[in-house]
Image (tube, rainbow, N blue to C red):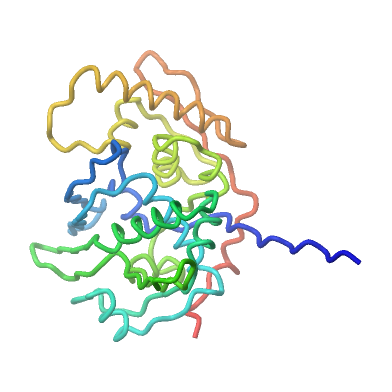
Length: 293
């Protein structure tokens, strides 16, 4: 008598990324091997705040995938409440950031599967390196010239075993969207996994933050380019600009192949109309939950 094959767990279908983190430009298309220190400053519209993210190693599309995967899992029943005292210790929180947050116990294999990657020992090592980069990002929130809060983006503890448990805690600002306490961008991981280039993944994440489900907007290739390669103030060679414009157009074609997404042709003013599909499966009211004890 043959045993029935084990049913594979369903992949999570979306992640909620806090709006400021989504729009600040934390992630960019990085040439391989060029991870440098980077400072990202962003002032949320309608506020007197300046959010300063300090990246010890600049973050790329692979780090975006890992963070979205962590956020999707921590919002599930597996996510556990972490008190403000414990969160302060593991995330080096100061000021207003000293709040309850969420933590997650997972494994390399689970994170790899949820990210849509094939498992291998090398992939496991790259995953840990990405968590290391994310854990070395610090955030200062300044209001009227005074630093009101400070802390890490996330913290992780990795066992040395090949597939031993990984313990992850996320910033309270990231955790607050699970409770509905902050504005957030809904990024489809089903769509994210289908995209094959870093440019397309980064552009899709920004478009998902800029456009609400079922809405549309116009943007130029130059504007979209700035959200994949944030301006660092340095002059860009014309050849590099041509290549980047080509990559943006290729990424838009890739995104237009996703179910429901529509990308128009460039008009005489250089703008492209982009339509994001309505998410028929989103059932926000009962999916929001209070902290799990």
